[in-house]
Structure formats: C-alpha cells, structure tokens
Amino acid sequence: MRAEARYTPYHPRWYRRRVSVWWWLQNRAYAGFVLRELTSVFVAFFAGVTLWQLRTLAQGPDAYARFLACLGTPLFVALHAVAFLFVLFHSITWFNLAPTAVVVRLSGKRVPDWVVVGLNYAAWLVLSGAVALIVLRGR
Amino acid sequence: MPRSITPFLWLLFSAGGTVAALLFPIHVLLTGLAVPLGWVNAPSYESVLGLVRNPVARLYLFVFVSLPLFHWAHRFRYTLYDGLQVKHLTALIVVFCYGTALAGTVMAAYLLWTIP
Image (cartoon, rainbow over all chains, first blue to last red; front, side):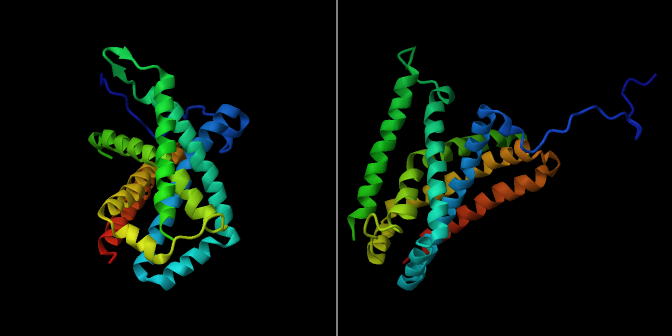
C-alpha cells in the first residue's frame, strides 16, 4: 500500500464561504486596522512627491517654480490634506505600538509602556520643531 | 521569496515606519499645506538648493525617501493579501512592491548624487 496521498482532479473542494472585499467595514476595530495599513499608501505618495521635488530642484528654478505651482492646485492641496491625516494616524498608531514591538529593559527591569510611548512623542515634537526651523530658516 | 530575506524586510519595514512616523507629518504639513496655502513664506529656490547641497541633508533625504518606501512595500504587500484577497498573485505583488521601492531608492541616490 502506498503511504502518500494521491491527488486527482476529482478531489472534493472544501467549503469556504466567500468573504466580501469590504469585510473590514462591519467592525470598528477591523476598519481601524485596514485604515492603519492604508497609511502606507500616503507614506509612499509623499516619498514620491519628495522625489519629484528633488528632480525639479536639479532641473533649475523654472522647473522648481512649476513644481510649487502644481502643489498649489486644489487637487494637490486636497491630496496633501488627506495625506496629512493618514500620516498623522500612522505616527500615533506607530508610537502607541512601540512598547509592544520593542521591550526596553534597564538593569533587568522592564521600562513602563508609558515611558516608551512618551519618549517617542517627545522625539517626534523635537524633530518636527527642528525640521520646521531648518526648512523655514532661509527665505 | 527566499525565507532568509524575510527578517531583513521586516527590519526595513520597522526602520521605514519609524522614519515616516517621526518625520513625515511635519514635512507633509510644510510642503503640502503650509507653503501652498501661504501660511508661511515659501523658501526660495536658492535656499532650498543650498540646503540640499549639504552632505548631511543629502543623507537625510536619501533615508527620508528610501526607508519609508520599503515600509510601504512591505505593509502594502500584506494589505493586498488580506484586503483584496489576491493571494494567487503573490509573485506579481512582491515584484511590484519591492521593485517600486528599489526604483525609488535608486532614483533618490541618483538625484542626490547629481544635484549640482
């Protein structure tokens, strides 16, 4: 007798319920999860905008002026408003999950979650302030 | 996808997620909203170029573009799996996601290297 199973085209299909593509809208927690995952799309979008900015910067003042004009159109302002909300959601969920992802120990004792989260928010504020100062310094 | 590369992809995911969480909101606010809507004066072309000429700023911008793109690639890959239930397109999704991140990384390196 052969030990391994033999598969034939007549293998019965398992019963699997079809799940709608919108399964995550039925529950707040699921919706939050999918929205959190979708923040990555806006992260990639803004990385792309930054590449575009660098390209026009390399091309010269005229190209850069056209880039700035493009960002002023209602379409891009609306896109950036939505992108801002999503990257903000990414930051908040990322910082709040930080103590779960990385357990920090000091002399054998686990650093409390609120300290890790607090340090993340503090670093965020300091870095944001520094970026704003540096970018807006030269006019 | 060879199994040995998976931990490396998770590392890129978390590094990029941290960079995006710490730095993206202020940059989106400044570049995407504050400057176009006139809340602040737009920095001149010369001053932005002067800033980007700084080697530290170039390194900053490279990390700023590249790591978050890999963060997107990794997260979006699983979003497509779970959300759209397209598990049968695994290879295509992997090539599209990491390929885009890699292309963006090469483009960032090229641009930052060649900016006068």
